Amino acid sequence: MREKMVVLEVKENEVVLKNTDEGSCHSCPLHSICKVDPERYTLKVEKGDWDISEGDIVVIKTPRAISSRVSFLLYTIPLLIFISILSILKSLGFSDISSFLFSIGGVGIYYAILKFLDSKLKKRFSPKIVEVIKARQNFQN
Image 1 (cartoon, rainbow, N blue to C red):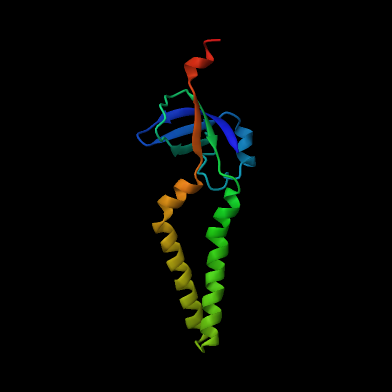
Image 2: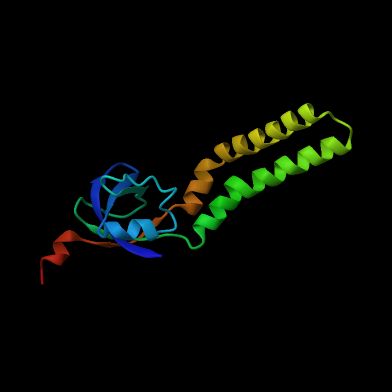
């Protein structure tokens, strides 16, 4: 999905963008995970090597099927880990409480690994700037 956004602020490694059509945020597959400020409808993305100034219009690209992949990583895999550890330990004769606690521990370890890999995953699933339309170009017509 591609969308035009206006640059509000340029920081060292990231850019704060404002959606030009605030109604489209709710139809975006990332609206639940992209840290959109509901009052300003802003989004922070990596600046990359682009020459960007405040007021420029940029085109961002959101990876397809992002919400299903993120949901799979955050909900399905931990559930499978929990059920697997619980089932294995119960079949080995562990008590209900110890099986439950080890299962919770396994899910905790999975989330700790995800936290460690967060920067790599964030780069893979984050929107990226694909085009910069300079603000001054809009007024030359």
